[in-house]
Amino acid sequence: MKISFIINGKNETLEVDGNTPLLWAIRDVLDLKGTKFGCGKAACGACTIHVDGQQVRSCSYPVKYAEGKKITTIEGLSNGSELHAVQQAWEEFVVPQCGYCQPGFIMSTAALLKQIPNPTDEDIDNAIINVCRCGTYYRMRKAIHRAAEIQAEFISSSSVNADK
Image (cartoon, rainbow, N blue to C red; front, top):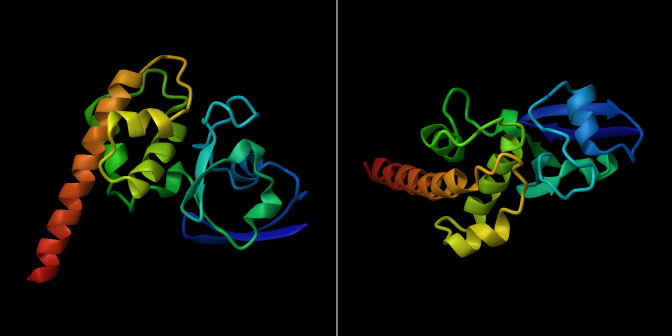
């Protein structure tokens, strides 16, 4: 089955079994290795990507549902050499320990900040339900709050520059 979509701003058409999990199309066919396999049951969040701006656990999302959609993986989150606010905060707080699950956490956090620009701890607890075997949750929470600040600063400076 032919499936066409936009991934990280690039048009792609794949010839794959429509029931193949999108994760494997991303990793094995498109060779984008940032999205990780964790549990295969949509429970851990290591495979989190964005489909039309919504976070999706790609290990349980059949590729046929990606037809015509806009997909963003961790490789497409930044804007060229300019890191996304979440990536900046993750770096600032040295969040990763082993790092395996972090692309999924970053993608989940980016989706959260899109919906709730200034999340409370409760918002974070309710939205970020991925699993980190190393237990870096404390640093992640601090980084999520910092990412919200970075994002707000960027929006503020953009509106000031637009007024000039």
